[in-house]
Image (cartoon, rainbow over all chains, first blue to last red):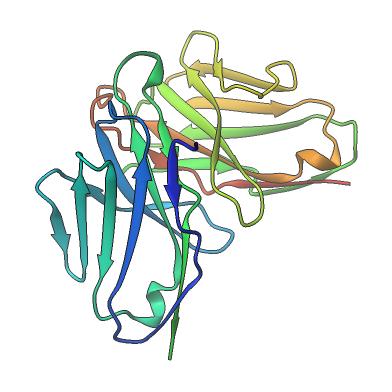
Length: 112
Length: 118
């Protein structure tokens, strides 16, 4: 089983739609969680960190469920510019495992 | 903001040659840098963790003698792909963790280097 798993998509949604992505992780000791956005042939850019209490940044809401070991990203009122690959990333802090592991990414295509 | 510069952005080389990629943290010190590789339509796969002043830690399945990593200063890590072959063609991305921020988990990424081996 992969350490971090995502539905690769693609998710094809119309402008204005709400779309949600989930990501599961296998290591219960994981301590920090992130969503990154990656445009085609570019490096990933941090979209938001994910906190236990959940957090919101404009149209984007991230949630963490430690009991079920998944994180989610909700995008409201999708824009054409939201089209990208969304990568979840999980970090196990401390010692030899202090490294960021990425999921396979979920491709989002927002249609006009 | 924290800036990581990676060079070169693109490189095309002949099979059998070696290619060096540099990763620099421009406005912060980075005790730890990471090297990832991404094949088309696949995720970023961690290759190795580069620690300033010590040997890199390689992930399982990554040949340390083929992918040489040097982290000689707090702002520079280099990845050398030795005797490159077409199957090494990929997008190589470095990332840096700010010294002192080991428990935030946040990384800053370089722009990536696209290697094509003919």
